[in-house]
Image (cartoon, rainbow, N blue to C red):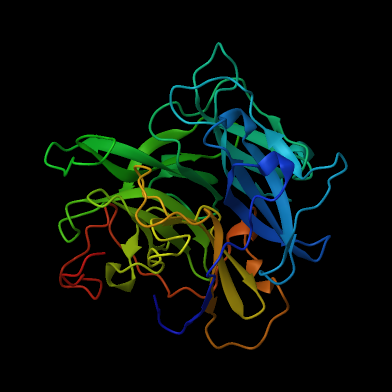
Length: 390
């Protein structure tokens, strides 16, 4: 779990945010996006109330913290902290699931100063897929179309704003969506996985205008010959670093159905390199912990002072909903790294970044080097993995 110039300071033994409101009963909580709230002088978290028994109760909510450990769920004026709910339309695949919120204060359209991508079926007459929403303040949201922008693939993705040139002239994009996609592979282990013979990997969609045409999917990251045969890439959460981008890959191990987090880096958001010798930066917890079956991070890191905080989802069940060990509550945990040694900065100063990336800046993960589009690392390079399981 250790990386160059940083150490693990703290990992929560119990969830830091629990379902304790009437509209959160029998639900688990998932951190969606975290960012500084300049007006409030603290950090704003968007989190999803996820109710497996009744998906119509899923809701996007807001919480605040000043130190990363103590959280407040504010009353936004109607007796709750809910900022968006789904359409209520039934889907064959997935549920109302906000994926990412970004703040884009320079957008000339004030109604789009806050942007979101989410999985939804907007109307009964249209298919389900990834939809876009906009807001002038991050609280009052409206969907931008009755038809999804992407209707293929999985409901896991990440949205990020970029200002780097693409790999060719026709891909000079301003926004990326990273999505889980599949390819057929009949040789995969199939004992427990729900997608028989389908290999999960990460592809990219891109556009020059948020409400414009999205181009994709373009394969950018997949397991290779140095990985265990049951490893699949379930999710990629991308965030800004001091130079380039970092990413948390949710690594799904289909044999035991556990999921942990690995680190990847990129200079341009297109080509990625595996880090930490392909070992997890956040492994699953041990017996008795709330996160002993699955860990994942959708919201990415946040910086407060000289510490980097990573909110993550954890549960005792593995991917196929079987208990790995006895079942503690499932909710949000906290993982804290020391930043590299640098002069002290004001709280949240590390969030500074280009347009829209205040929610996803992490200045102190090890620096990136150019990798390969499919993450097939050169075996002679310093990133060559050892034989241990990732």
